[in-house]
Length: 470
Image (cartoon, rainbow, N blue to C red; front, top):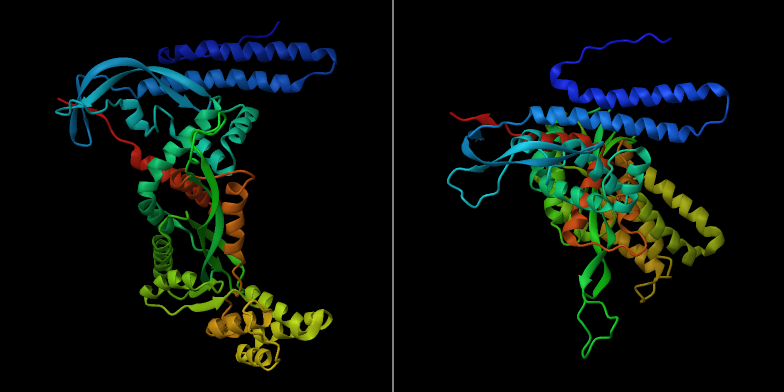
C-alpha cells in the first residue's frame, strides 16, 4: 500500500487542486501500466502529460490574472480618472490556452464615446483583445521565421499556443503595430545596453539592395469580365528594398556581432541609415578609439545614403566591396587574356590590390592599354575600366588591411539573403507595404539577437498601474 502525502493548499488556490489531482492520477495510471514489459506508445504519454500540465497552467493563470483585477467605482490610470461602466467575463490568451476571468470595465470620465479598458489588460500590457506578452511575442517570433500556417503547425507540435491559424497571422501584426511607433526609442535603449566585446577594434557599416515581391492593384480589362475573373486583380512586381548592417570586428577584421536594419521599397532608406549612423555614434562615444569602415558596391545611391556618417565628425575608410571588384576584373581578364590565363591574371591583380596602394592605377592602365575596350558599354573591359575610374578612390585595401578592417561586404549581402530572401521571396509570395514592413522589422530584430530585449522593452512601456480613486 502506497503512503499518501498531504499537501496544504491555501484557500485562495483551491481551484488548482482538481487539475493537479488529475495529472497525478494520469501519471499514476501510466506508471502502473508500464510494469508489464510491453511496448509503449510514449508519444501518447508525452501528449497526455502536456495536456495535463497545460490544464494546471491555465488554472494558475486564472488565479493570477484574477488577482490583477481592480474592481472599484472609480480608478486612476496615468493621472486620469476612469469610472466603472460594467462587468463581464473576459478571455486572456496564454501559452497554454485561453483563460476566462471576470473583470470590471472602465471608461475615462468626460469621454462618453471612448473605448472601455480593464485593469488586467493594462497591468499586463496585453496586446489586442487580451493576448498576453509572452504569447504574443512567441507568435510574432514564429511569423518572422515562416508563414502563419508553419507557425501554427510548429506550435501544435510543441504542445503550446493552441489557437487557430488566423491568430498566428493577426496577433503578430497587432504586436508590430504597437512596436513600430516606438521603434526608434526602443532601439536607442538597445544600443545603449549593447555590451561591446573587449576584443572589438573596428566597426563597419554596409548597405545593399535586394529585390522583394510586392502586391500592386491591377486595372480590370475593358469590357465585361469573365465569369471566373478575380474580383480584386493584383500584379506581383519586384521592387528594391534596402538592407544594412553594423558589425563589430576584432583586430583581424573578423565579425563579432552584427546589428541588421531593413527598409521596404517604399520606406525611408535615408531615415534607416540615419538611425544606423546614430547607433554608430553611441558606440563610438563609449569606445572612441574604434576605427570605422563603410562598405558597399559601386551604386552611387548607396554611397549617398552612407554619407550621413560624415555628420558624426569622423573620417571613415570608404571601401568598395573587394569581391565586386574582382568579379569585374575577372570578366575583363577573360576577354583580354583568354579563359586559360584569366585565372592567373586575376590572382595577380587580387594580390596587387591587397598589398599595393597604387594597384588600382596600375590595373586601370593595363586595361586601358589592352586595346580591347569597345564602344559597346556592355563589353567587360569597358565595364571594368569604368568601375575603376568611378570607384578607384574607394579601393584603399592595403591601408584597410593594415588597420585590421574588413574589405568585403559579405555580411550585408548575407543579410539580404537571410532577412529578405529566405523569408519573403518564397515561391508565389507577395507583400503589401505595411504588413511586409511588420515582418521585415521583426525579422531584423531576431537576426540581430535582440528580439527578446526589444519585446521586453515594449511591454515594459505598455504596462500601466491601475489604482482605486477616492
